Length: 128
Image (cartoon, rainbow, N blue to C red; front, side, top):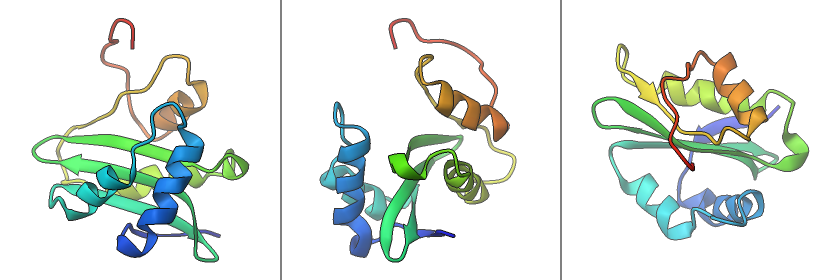
């Protein structure tokens, strides 16, 4: 079972490479991940299997929170790992604050994941 821990410089390069594999059309990039680990408002986590990043997520909490990014390696999807990452992000959120996220309507797997974690749709952006 994957261990979920803070994303640090140690895992930065491999996590950025995983992100580019998962989201080739718009990778977050190593510089953005580096900013996230240095920003006191950000809570980046990584899931490791035998020392290899297989999933990650970032929560930003200034007042209300926002899940900025969640990614799971393709061969590790549908095993509950995404749910564990989201759960870990929510544990790091300030109690009693709202947490928001955006997800494409066409991304049914992500929508199901977030709904199972208790998120509710409150609006839709045109052309998202």
